[in-house]
Length: 511
Image 1 (spheres, rainbow, N blue to C red):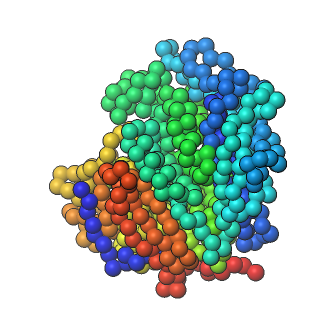
Image 2 (cartoon, rainbow, N blue to C red):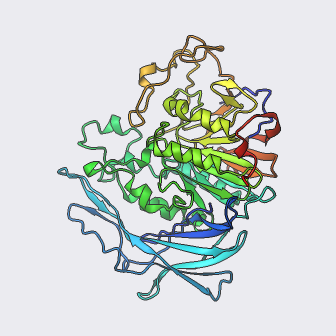
Image 3 (cartoon, one colour):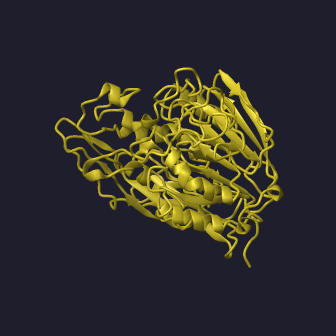
């Protein structure tokens, strides 16, 4: 069922990353394209691709069991041959390799050690250009087949990727298959994955899974994971992410606690991020340009308060955005600030309290989230009020998941959650108090679809963003019910910066 609640602000205003190659062992490579930096000469920002090839057991498979023996990450070379022609591949780049472990020091639990993961960076690539490549270790020999990718267009107000696919909460299910088939049919130039990649943490180390871990496995000594799900997911995704750059931000299912308090091991090892290039030096938050769009990827599961490294980085990143070069400013993180669904309702309120003013002051055009397993698009909103200068918030947590669809709305009779039950224990804090003004004043929930909620539907699907120029972008949400990905929601997003007062630095380059 879908619910529409359009506002008068429907006509809304609203580097290149890392390419990972996962062969059977796992190979990740970073391809860099030359893009424009407003304060410097053209400089490289990574673009992420992720081919899964088959290099064979000579390079090493993952191991899971009681007596695992981690592989020597330096036992093989990390090489990519590439060029503008399929034959010959005239350029060569070398990189480094790593392995990671997922360890559980409890009797009966199985430990995991990955295959060898290779990171290779390609530099000096031309924008908007097709390159062919293969990867592996030619001395063994163990080389993948030949793949290809196209770099992002140069950063300018007249240059944009044709189509950007945006998905969240994918997992590896029947619904995931339909979503990815539909994404491929839309031929995107870039893929954004807004957290919750494999749902490996909904499984015990013996591979037994459940839609609700705490319901089915309440007595496990630690929250287990089944790490081979990451390997299966990568091979499943290869037809898409071997040729389309993918940018990822972490979700709660990537936390994956293990021995000695280590977290996010798979996420941080298996993907590569433009952290250094964007000045964050973190895998949890970073930024990049794709044509005339500046993307900011934020972490909800690390510190985000005003004294945190992330917040200080965000201030600097926003201050350095030159809107005359990248007119569009898009932010993403996993849990939504604006959702009308009962699931995860106002769960990220503390993050909103800390960061919303900053993002608003720099005129962010669109925000993309996942986490809630449904689709919802807001009207332009700021601090729960309709605001023509606020961003659109779009939730696309409907990629496939493993935990079923979110259906109930917090505004329906009997569905408003108890306030103290809403905070995420990992995010910490309690900030979601009763509203003090507006139609919901004195209450924790609205008694009808909130004004900020323009459209909502409990269906699996994905979104496509097509930025036409510095003023107009077409947003289309495709539901999965139809085999060809039927259009479920579509609007033009219109930027009108002259009507809003923002930080001067966000519109003009510094001298």
